[in-house]
Length: 127
Image 1 (cartoon, rainbow, N blue to C red):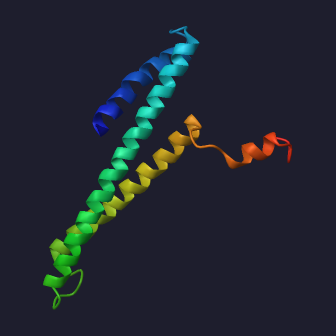
Image 2: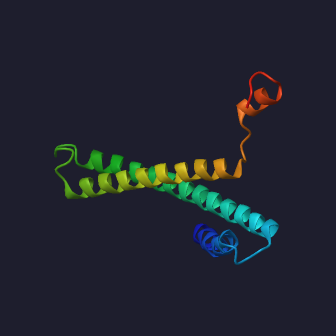
Image 3: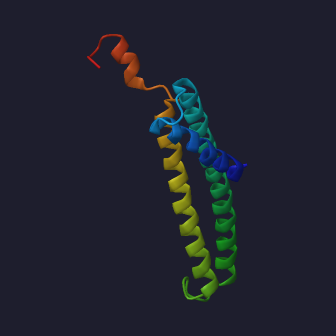
């Protein structure tokens, strides 16, 4: 589903840019397509985050098992251990990126209610 969502984003994004360049004139439809493509991006990022969390859990378990097997050897002297640590770091970085993508997509879509909006509407300060 992650790749299908990402492909849909890339496909729909072409219509968005056609609208922005003035080739495609229906503004309401361009806005709808833009919103759908952002939802696809956010959903793809959520899928990526879930996959990365699962992989980090699997790698963590594998690393703990390897540590128990290699008690006498130094922690990072084993090539297998170094490879797993590198994979773990790569997966952690991918999780951070996917999480930030979710936050950016959420901000662009304005899905989550903003706390300061309710204060603005009640007249506590000028917005």
